[in-house]
Every structure is written in structure tokens, then in C-alpha cells.
Length: 459
Figure (cartoon, one colour):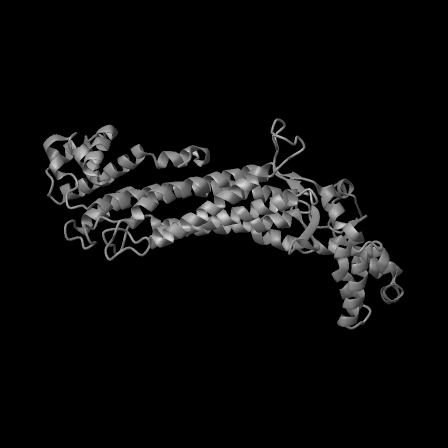
């Protein structure tokens, strides 16, 4: 776990000391259950409850024995005297390791879930703030039709929400324990012990297990984190694309003393978004490794163990880290409405071509093929620099006679693209603080003035 990318709350869950303490908790709860069954004397249980963890001594024993859990048991036994012979009664190593690991992943998921909610809140605020901030929609990286920044962010919000729900389901799958012995049959430890341990740790007992918990659970958990990373990568990629110099509609926060380049003082690079994209790739790699860990031999082998020591703590840390980074980016997003409108009006409003096409078909009665070819020709001329699309439409004798000035004016009404966006906001439970005013084409007067929009139509 790299400290640079490890939030302290996650790092604390996966320290060696925390792991040993959780192992001890599993052992002590198992001892309590055995005492209730009359297999451990009460005085021995009292002594076991006074057990201490000497991490240095355990490390020495591990170096000697080559087995971390066996070294842990031996180290703890040394601190409790004769009662130590009752420690680890009937258990196998994975009973302790897998059950303790389940508590770590569950607790890490709680941190990640809280970070998800913080990002959702930031996206909600920005989506509501920019509900009517008109901008260009793009498909294939090419101008399509107008939408608003708020709607764009609402899409990302919905993805993050789904990711949180998905993580919750995966967390429920991983929050199980097993105290079932060497091959999962409870031959050496009754189910009563398993139920007591799991109940006290806030876990569900696995319905069935081998020597280990089935690794499809861990793979599902890692996959949910990787999917969340992919969702964050899409958000970061959106901002990176908006920050391209030729677009320049929004950019990630950049502090006053920050340097974008050691050589070029003018540079303001989207390094935070790029960091999210890079770490999202790491998460996908971890998810692939977790799926490779599912097919263990028979009742278990150990091929999963070494991989999980890396991928599970790291995946939790990286996910929390990029969630917090994403929240910071969204909260500090520098939005440029005037640049959005300038891009919207590029080539004289050529992006309103579908509305001209529809008007020729519906209002003028043209065939779709005739209308499409006529509008396509005018759009091509606008893109080639022969004039603004709106002017070319008005100057074309056939089109202008077929539609008339008022219909042409209506074709270039940006408010038509905003008329139904409140449906999305209601479905997502977002606030609609400024009800849509169709008379003003959905553009508040203050925004219209700032963005260079007159009456809702780009100028």
C-alpha cells in the first residue's frame, strides 16, 4: 500500500497490528464459544482474555516457522501460560484469516461508501447549479445537439449512485465468516462456535465453505471497486476532454501557486483527472487477479493468498483515494459558460440542423430524403466556411419559402432542447430551483447575459 494513495482510515484497517488484533478477536470469540460448550475451563478463558500481541516476537517466530498464523498462535500462547494450550482449539488457519479479513473488507467498504456519498453530494450540487448552463453535446467527439452541464453531470451522478448500490451488494457477500475446520465440515469445531464468532463480529456464517471462503465473493467485491473506478474514470475523462485547449469549457481546479509544467509557465494540465484514469486501470487489473483466484484446487490451495495481500488492501485504498480526488475536482470545477456558448454557435448554429430537417418534413411537407439532403448541403457549406448555417438557411430560396421567418427562428431556439430536462431532475430527486420558463427558452436572464445568449438563442 503506497502512502501517497492510501487514505489514513483505510491504511489503519490494514496495518499489521490491526490484522493481528482482528485475528486475536476471532480466536477469543471462538474460545468463548468453546467455554460455553464446556470444552475450555472458565479460568483458562479468563487467562486467554488477557492475551497480548507482541508483534516483534510473532515476526521472529514467523521467520523461524515460515507460517504467519502458526507464529501468531505461538506468540499469543507465550503470553497466557498454561491456558495457551486451549487457544486455536479445533481451528484451521483460514478460519481465523478469512473471518478476520471479512471484517477488514466490510469496514473498508464503509469508508468507501461514505466517500461515494460525498462525491454524490458534490455532483448533486453542481448538477443543480448548472441545470441551465447550456453547452454542446458531443457524440463520437463531434458536436451533436445542445444540452446543459447539469444534465451531463446528472449522468455521472446516476453512475456513482449505482456503483454505491453495487458495492453494497458485494459487501454483503463478503461480510461472512467461517469457523468450519480443515475442509469445511465442522468435524473439529461445531457450528455453534462458528455462529458465536460471526455474531460477535457482525458477520453472517457462510452457508458452506471449504478450508476457505469461496473466492467468488472476493472477486465480486474487487469487481465492484473496479467498476466504481471505471465510473470515476469516465467522469475524469469528461473533464479532461472539456479542458482541451480547443474546447476550453471547464477545467479541474488549479491553485494559485501550482505549476503545470517545469518548462512552460502557461500550462494548466488536468493532472488530477489523469491520476484517476491511471489508478482506475490498476483497479481493473486487481479485479482480473481476483477472478483468477476463484478456481482454487479442491478444498483450497494457497495461490490466492499472496495476491490478496496486495490487491485487497490496495484496491480499497485506491478506491477511497480516487473518490476523494474526484470530489475535490467536482467541487472546484472551473466552468466557462461563455466558451460553451461560443462552441455552441460555431459555424453559425449548424447543430440546429435536426430542427430545420424536422420543420421541413412536418411543417413544409417535404419528403425526409429531400429535406435531409437540402439541410446536409447547407450544413456542409457552413462547415466549409461559406457562411453561418442560420444565414445560409435564411438565404436559401426553397428552404426559406417553405418555412418562413418565424419557423426558421423557432428552429434555432435553444430552449427547445431544455424543455424536458426537468424530467431527468425529478427522476434523480434533484432540486429544480428555477422552474423552466419556456417563454425565456429555459435560459435565466443572468445566465443569458453572462453567456452571450439573447432570448435563449445563441448570437
